[in-house]
Length: 227
Length: 252
Image: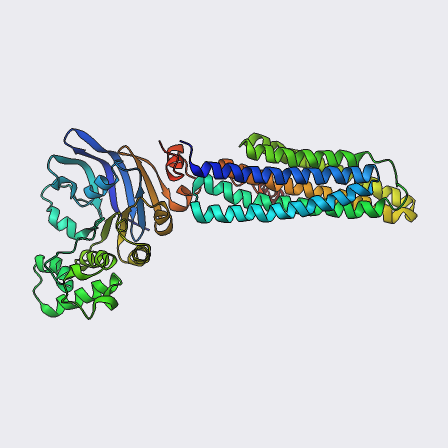
């Protein structure tokens, strides 16, 4: 039996998906800005972020309205609670894209430090994470959400590698310290985007299965350390 | 927490039709248990078996065990009327006795039980009206007919009437379905207060009401109990997909 409420939930999901699409575009624009040293793409990131902020408010309003009007329970309740949290993570991803744009702006004012190999890979991984988390949400695919959690390890690995490479470089050439710092900050912001995608994947799993898996890996690590 | 009422293998019929099928369920002291389920699922019949009211319907029968503090209310030689004093009931529609005053409506159970002493009657009536949060509203019109009160007040009068004989368990069959939201809120507050002194079993069609006031919830379907558990779990992460479909309104 299709409920009127189901149509409202579908609309809510569509709102969230189009917001995630904007975040993906912002990450893409930031990548191009860095790789092609393109200032127009930096402006585009700022423009997209303003649209993400507007979507953030619209999604929250829809959630508050549905909570008040429908008083959802069980899976419906979990879906709306997850949406409120996913919404916040998407908005913060938009902020991170803007941070990357700022760092890129400073970076492209100077000479390139070195050919970029790992950063473009990191950008791509982060973008795919955003897409897959939202796909898992729309398709209620908990297995895909778990896949995203694994992908975060790749992003973290790339960040560590970039940190090490850039540190080695600026140790040898201290005059490049500012450029090196810009790259480190970009990698750091991309890692944060991966963390937000991880949060979203955890919320998707909660919405679908009711299982709360947050912090579980950390708890396991602590348990192992104690035994 | 200790079990005050325990249901074992309870079955109930209307003639040939089985309405309640082999229910096992324990009620802890000083808790509120909500019974939810679609119309005709057997929830009202189930609670009417808990104080032997079901058997008053022609051709209605019940089988099984209901242990109140360990004693089977379906045991040999047990007087159903005595049971109903220990396990009181409040119905969907407020039903004060039309010819009786506010005071007499509350006192009637005690009088029927043989209490004659006026001072003690007065004390218990006043205490019951306090417990049902009605005293302040009726203390100046104790001699007015019970039916002169508003619907919500009449329902609290019926609760006071049930409380007067000091039951250990109170059964409530959709007690707010005929009331406006303000009166409903008062009854809900009252239920939360009353559980300090009595154990409450409430049948309700209002999911939010069950979520707001009960400690545990049982979901009934076609005479079976599908799921019973902590209310906060049932309404956020129910185990059975039938419970999930019912409470999200997807059933059918």
